[in-house]
Image 1 (tube, rainbow, N blue to C red):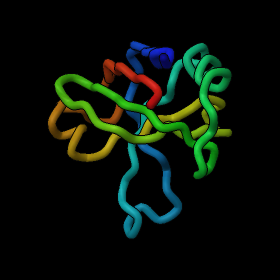
Image 2 (image 1 turned 120 degrees about the vertical axis):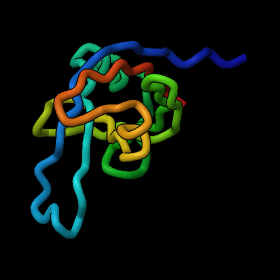
Image 3 (image 1 turned 135 degrees about the vertical axis):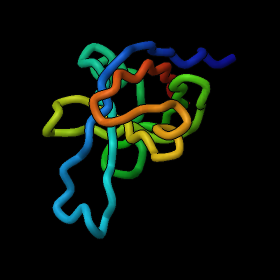
Length: 105
């Protein structure tokens, strides 16, 4: 019998990644995980294949989806990408506080 994955609840601001060429690559938005959540994930999760990513299921508001969190040397924590469809559905703009429920998958 497998142990259920831990679930984390937190609120954090949405921020825009300053891409080198936003005109061609588009704007990317993220939420930085709290340091204590990032530390716990680092301990319990086996890193995925891409860039040390970890697969997660996320809920913000009424929207739930599966994605990955990525370690960020700039932020010194994992960061969660928030796609445009989620931002639009939940009325999130840069700087908005996002209420996040996150679990490992």
